[in-house]
Each structure stands twice: as structure tokens, then as C-alpha cells.
Amino acid sequence: GAVVSQHPSWVICKSGTSVKIECRSLDFQATTMFWYRQFPKQSLMLMATSNEGSKATYEQGVEKDKFLINHASLTLSTLTVTSAHPEDSSFYICSALTSGSGTQYFGPGTRLTVL
Amino acid sequence: DAKTTQPPSMDCAEGRAANLPCNHSTISGNEYVYWYRQIHSQGPQYIIHGLKNNETNEMASLIITEDRKSSTLILPHATLRDTAVYYCIVRVPTPLTGANSKLTFGKGITLSVRP
Image (tube, rainbow over all chains, first blue to last red; front, side):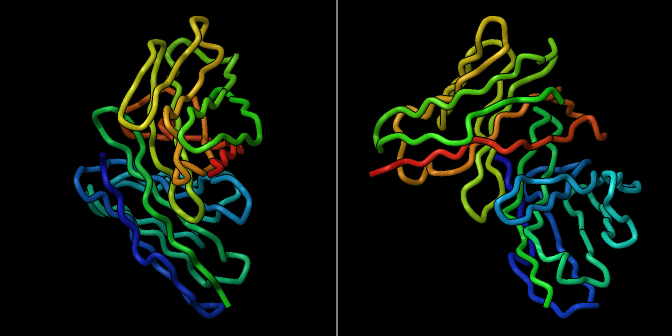
């Protein structure tokens, strides 16, 4: 199956700093990638849709200036959490859309803890 | 995406078949049924998808009723590693870019496999 990686797998940062999370499709090209957030004991919530070479589409209630998304190549999308606060602590998961079957494959997730 | 309903939880004995039900009574004619699972603290894993015919792969079988209003995911010989939250999602498998290809996760069904 298609493989998606994320880096880092976990990160701890101080309040007010920015954190960048990378999402890579390792064995396929992905024009579209997605970013999700998951709080403890809750389901995944879509944050934004990332399209290569164009601006991301954010879901209602997600601040685009706080969660910066860059999809600069067909295998890499990045999510930057700017001026992180403790309430941003969560599990961030990306997925990549295959062009053939239209199936989404997910990365292993990044655990962000903001102190 | 059409909504799906799943029981909150179920359990089964190791080595036995696990049959996970899903209701999707408002599914449209061009929407597929997708199944993903999420093991604790990991990203979701794609399992299988189908339109109207039964499907089988190395992980599971998907049985879709003739009226397509419900489906069952079958894990033929459940192991302890199959303990996870299983999500049933219906959507159009858009292989192209765009927000139409996003997945909407419900609460899923928690499968517990007991020794």
C-alpha cells in the first residue's frame, strides 16, 4: 500500500513558539493532502485541504494565519503551528490522496505538546 | 458525505471472525463505502472500500447489502492486534484534487479482541 510519513513523531515546545510538521508521500505523488487534528478520546477533525501549488482550503473555524500550510511539491506538505499555545496541544495527522483509486492514506501522526 | 451509524463498541474472541456493522441508509448511487481503522495513538489505516459488490483483500471482506443501505466489515480471524476503532465512511472516490475528496470521520466502533 501507499506510504505516508510524518516528521517529527512528537514535539514539545514552549508557548509562543512555532512548530513545523512535515508530511511526505513516500512512494506516490499526491496533488492533494489533508491535515487533521485529534483531541483525546475524540474523532479526527479535518483542518484543511492542501493542494500542490495553490492555497490551502481551511475548514470553518480553523485560523489560516495560525495554521500555515505549504504544499510545495507533489510529495511534501507542511503544517506550521504559529505562536503555539497549550490549547494547540493535540495529535496532528496528515493524509495523502492517491490519483489512481482516489483513496486517502494516512501518516502516523505527530503528537504536539505546548508547555 | 452521507452519514453512517455504527454501534459504539463490540468485542470478539481471538481467532474468531469479527463482523462490524454499518448503516448508511442515505447513501447516494455514486458513493463508495470505505473502512479505516485507528489503533491507539497511530494514524488511521485504510482497510477496504467498495461500491455494491462484495470485496475482499488480505485484511478483510466487505459485504454490502443489495439496497446498499448497510454493510459489514468482516475480519475473518481476529487477533489482539486488530483491537482498534473502526470507521465506516461513505464518499465519492474523487481521484482529482479538491475538497470533495475529503473524509468525514464519525465516532466509529471500538473493537476489542479478547484472548
